Image (cartoon, rainbow, N blue to C red; front, side, top):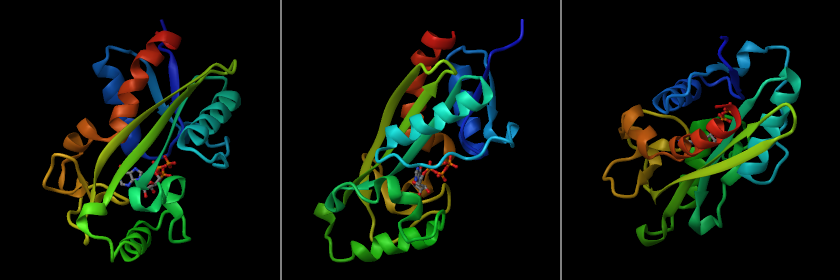
Length: 202
Ligand code: ITT
């Protein structure tokens, strides 16, 4: 019997490895491929105003274009004192999409006068599953923490060097990938997706 193919709407190999491990741990035998396996399918514009909307947009577009079930995620950093910003703008906060260093430095500068008592923030992730017939599900995960005044650590990406997760004395960039996945917004959202995948594809 051929294995059910599931596409993940990302070109980020780390995300594919992480979801693959979570699905395998759950006993789901699916063939997981990244968007790179379908180079003719264009990237979807993230025109939604919430993480969930953007994850659903990406999953539906890929499911429609390929005729296969598709998973997509959208994530970002939400800062309490900024009323949830950068949020969906996290990847392009400084104006240039994907310039992690500029994004982090701009955020630190904006928060320079804010003391430790008011530096709460969380990473948020929405993960969506869409089927070619239009069926959809979306789940969310969060990692709460506080923002440091300066970056520390070299692991991870994005805002990892300044987010110290709740209950930890180090930043996300000082955790190993496995330690981060165990508590991360994306790890939680992907794990919450397991029963959904079982329900719709199991
Ligand atoms: P895709 O290609 O999969 O869309 P992306 O780089 O756009 O990946 P995300 O949507 O997952 O990444 O995240 C958007 C931004 O939010 C990302 O550029 C980071 O600035 C920030 N971010 C999200 N998750 C993060 C994490 O685990 N650690 C640090 N920063 C994160």
